[in-house]
Image (cartoon, rainbow, N blue to C red; front, top):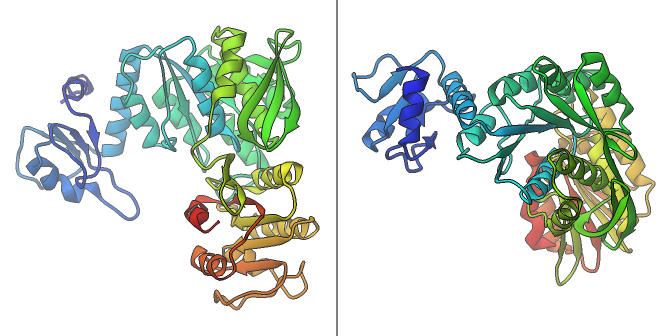
Length: 446
């Protein structure tokens, strides 16, 4: 079977299936494997359930016209996705960055919808499996916004090869995934693989004109750069006019002012708004439509999400965390929150050798803030806390009840027990942490 033949089968199928616990009838079953699973073991199940084609690496199965045996099922999925993307002819805008890429993607999708039929990455399908699945969901849309995540060098380049974007945006470069990238310079090199790809194919990079690092690197790589900012290629300006708690901004598009009352919380979203507006201007969306789309966006994905309950007001931003995004979110609470204030912070993941230093520096800074209550979750925080450090007490790797203004828990279960026995009431709370802590689960306790 060739990719063309596989694609013909895909067009007549019910879609892609990677899990036989879900409906596989008439699907293209792809036997993916990872560190803790191997889809090849379930190919017989997929065949019994009536899959249209099973892509597998197994050579020991009984002959079946539906079997397509390949060296790598993942690579076959990626090749199929690339083939489908090229057949669709959709304009692709790729988005990556250390912080804000998902919110920027969501805002940009709402903006471009004002003029085009648009597809965009759903949820967090932004890796070597998620990007192909996003591309395979295309059904004749005019524009697709594809989010790209990475934690090792070479991944952004590989995702660009699959998606073949004509334009791209890097939101920013910060201290994220240092375990895989090694350093801030390593992060910069990895993220700007997108610029290198675009430069080699005549594509365009949409860049925040105030980001000197990205502007300089884009020039070095020779990519066609469209700078976003006052008197830049995409003539935009954005400034904060209020936060109570939602961000109010004045968006200026080619000199005309558009006051916006957004549903976003935190000044860190100002750049996300600017980039989404810049993308809209690049794609020819009318300025009034850009402003209306941004004002109408309501986050529902635990990013910059404001929740008001009977007892507390909560800013939920618990999908990911790194040193720069953590500080930005805390500064956002300090800017809009009314005492008493409370921080619930989960560990920052994938920081490698810098983890202890980054958690220690964050704790020292948090200890100096006028916050009534701080709850920290995760082994990295436990390891750096000691007697007298901002009122904390060294934990002995048990979730016993802590004392003082700052409390430390090894895991979410200890935090939940504490919130149950001593529930907060009347606080303005920031919940921020990496996915490993799944802090969104504590919302009912707040």
